[in-house]
Every structure is written in structure tokens, then in C-alpha cells.
Image 1 (tube, rainbow, N blue to C red):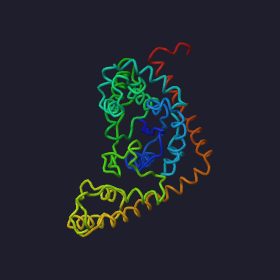
Image 2: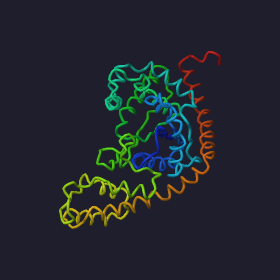
Image 3: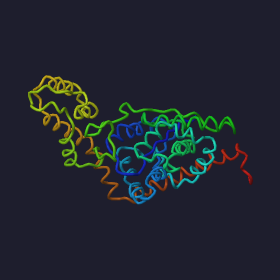
Image 4: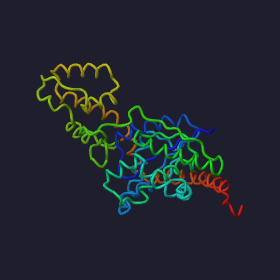
Length: 333
């Protein structure tokens, strides 16, 4: 069995540290461990809740590509492609739709949660409701069998496997079972203490942020509201600064000492925030520098996307030919 990994981002804005620890870090590792690696810019999925604002989606295609390239996703090892430019994905989605009931889609926990967050009720766009079917097609068009996902996306992957199983049972064996890989840090807390760093909540530190932007955001970070004076004992649990230091500061022994000092009292928030500013700036500085190269030459990024999309489409055509063959709808072959 070929080991094929597929990952992707919705182009709705620049990517942040939550994306890095939740997915990009895994992508970089997996591209060296798998025979084939695909990275999809999911512009069609982004349009399911941005249909009236397509320019937002279009303008961010290059942004998310540059973020991934700057972090180290290598177009020599990973095929970059744009979802909307592979019509075979849409065709496979239509075939898969016949294998899923409306009731099953509505029961999907990921879909239910996102519908509630967006306040759709019964007025949910059909495309949004079909997200799990679309994602199954994204993965299976490229015969991918490894997908790094956050915990909130596991129900979608479970449904993709149901679809693959039903297709194989009805028509014949075409698709492998999809296995998931979760990040060691599946969800990064927002700078405001919210459980998740999110574009929509505006509580993220972006991969392209300058030192000045990092400093401003870190100084506003949620710590321990009861830690009013330096001498007061402080709480480490739920303290965003220490959460980030645990993830991004390589000197774990010093961080452990700072935690003990903070809990006893005698360590101010400004001290630990200044340390975090330096840690994050050192982490993001090389990413910013590499990104600046792509920002100065956007045609280079476009060329990478075009070449990758052409390669991806050839593979997609092969998969759809196999699908139509087992479905007995290959009329003119």
C-alpha cells in the first residue's frame, strides 16, 4: 500500500501559531516519511460560508501558500494544488452524496457544532452541510490514506471512512481506509485565554507577525487575574504565557523553575512576557525572512501552485477513471 498523505487549509486569512502546532509541523515531518504528499488550498470549502465574499477567498490563496512554504513545506516533496482547479473532486463528491443520508450529515458532531457557531439553524447552506462528503472526496481523489487532523475534525474523517467503505462494498475495492494523525498540541489556546486560537476571534499570533506585533499581543496576554502584585502567588494552569512557553521555549528546565517561582510569588507577569516575546520572535524570525522572499516574488508562488495543480489533476483523472469503471459508467471506453 502506498503511503499517501493529504493536508490542507481554507484560504480565509493568514495562518497563525495554532495552525503551525496543530498541522504545519506535522506536514513538514510527514512529507519526508510518505511516498506521496499533497497540500490542498481548500478554496471551494472556504466558499461554503463565504459565497458572497469570493474576493476574500481568492486574495488569501497566495497567503496560505506562502505561510506553508515559509515554514518548510517543500514543493519538491509535496504537491501543492488548488481545490477548485481539480473538477474531478467535485465529480467524486456527487457520486459520494448518493451514499450519505441527510440525517447522517446533520448528526455529524463537527457539522452540528459549526452550524451552531454560525447560527444557521435550518437555513444552513447545502454546501456547508455537505462538508464531510466534500472532504471525503478531497482525500480519496488522491488515494490518500493518512490525514493529519485536529480532534474536532475526527468525526468528519470517520464519515469519510464510512463513505469509502460503502463505495467499496457496493461497487468494488478502490479506496483504502484513512488513518488519522493528531498533533501533540492539537489546539493552541488563544492569547485571550479562549480555548482555541481563531481568526474569527482575533486572538491569534500570526506566522507573519513582526516583533512589534508579537510584543503588543504578548503584553496583552491573559495570565492569572488574581496575580495582582509581584509578590502574590500565581497560577500556572490556564496561564496563557506559560502555555506558550511550554510549547515554544526549548529550555524546559528554566521554564519549570519560572513556574515554581511564579507559584510561590515574587515573579511578575512582565518578566515572563518579555521572555515569551523573545522566544516567539526567535521562532518566527526565520519564517518571516523566508516569507519575505515569496512576498517579493508572488509569481514564484503562482508557478508552484500551477505546476502542482497540473500534477494533481493527472492523478485525479486516473482515480475517476477507476471509479467510473467499477460504477459501470465508463460508456465510451
